[in-house]
Length: 138
Image (tube, rainbow, N blue to C red):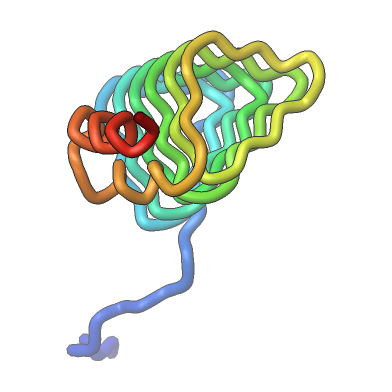
C-alpha cells in the first residue's frame, strides 16, 4: 500500500524538451531548463537555461536565466545572465542581457542592451526602464 506524503515535493531543476517535428502554440512557463528542437509560437518564461537547437524555431518573447541559441528566434529576448548565439543562430528582435557571446556566422537583426539595465527590466516595465537609462546617459 502507498502512503501519501504531506510534505511538498522539492526537486532540483527539471529539464524539458520540444523535439524536432513537434509544434506548440501558446505560452510556456517552467522553473527548470528548456530545450527547443521543434517549433514554438508563443512566449516562453523559464527560470533556468533555454537552448534553441539548430532546427529549433521560436516566434515569441522570451525571458530566461541564460540561453544558447543555435536555431531561429523571432521576438524580444530578456536573459538575466549569459546569452550565447552560436554560428547557426538567426535572431530577429531586441536583446536585453547581462553578457553576450556571438560566434562568427551568427545573424542578429535588432537592438541590444547589456549590463545593469537587464536587472531593472526584470523588475519594471521595459519602457519605463529605458527612459531611466536614457536620463542617466544624458
